[in-house]
Length: 400
View 1 (tube, rainbow, N blue to C red):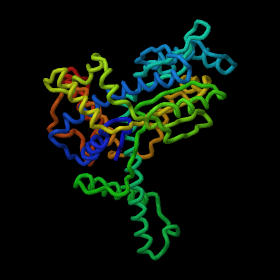
View 2 (view 1 turned 135 degrees about the horizontal axis):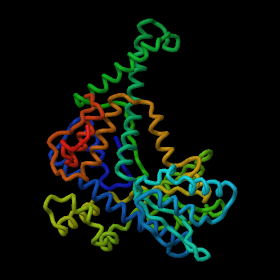
View 3 (view 1 turned 90 degrees about the vertical axis):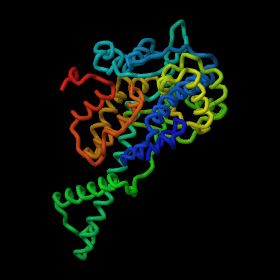
View 4 (view 1 turned 90 degrees about the horizontal axis):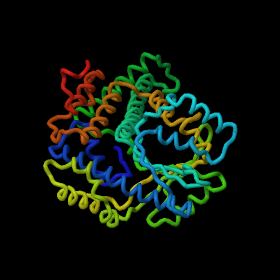
């Protein structure tokens, strides 16, 4: 149901997500999901850093300066510290940011690398690359699944309405339906879908969903320079532009999806030892040498190409997206508030996806049962306890 195109072995991950929605847990799933998450994050980190460095080198003719960050505040600070130019709007944005920095979601976690060029002795921010956090990946995956489920429920509710109209001998467009009848048909359609999941019947009508932006790059180029990005991409080996979307209005940028074929053997030869630390956690008593062999096999047997999202905008629009009218964090909040379907099934999909992507970061290595069944009903308190147990927070110290 969900394909994460920046990952390797994405069909295996898609299969686990699908099966867990049906409460179909296999004995090997605990180890497999840990490997899929940790090994993929390690691989994405390396190929994204390598690709970004090459891209900015081609764009600017020299290697950029780099800085690793873990909070969005570091990115926002970099944007306002040495602006490449000023106008009234930019000055107002920077003034407001410096006056009330705490209003700009500075503490948002962000696993990213910032790129700078030195101009007139000052480091000027020219772009960044980041890996989508698993918390956000779980949220986005759940939202895509929920949208698909909502569409399937609506289609079935429409079929029920068509049946009523047929019994009355009229077209559905001529049938007067009260809000109570519409709600009843929706709830009946929802209950049918819950039964399909519980009885592991195939779900008809839920479209396949693809997430392309786990690996992401942002490039700052002024309007007259934007063509240089396409020139650079066309000259990069193993790189093809597969999608392009222009955003205009509150948010002005060009979004491109790149199909990239990373140099696997080059990555495997040059991967520094310290980058294995997170991958070590996938092994149960395994040493670094065994984990390294497993990772080499994981990469060599995975897909040849992956997807990278590249967003290009000028400096002022990048500023707007971080501290202005279309601030990224505000857009996330809007997406959460605008979700149409909020029933128990939707909440359970969110819980299940969060558990799936959080499990690999816990100390647990076995799964006897899945804590969320899509057809059951839970309070948020229950899932709080699930996470507390996952990370071994003692119940007597966990606030209720």
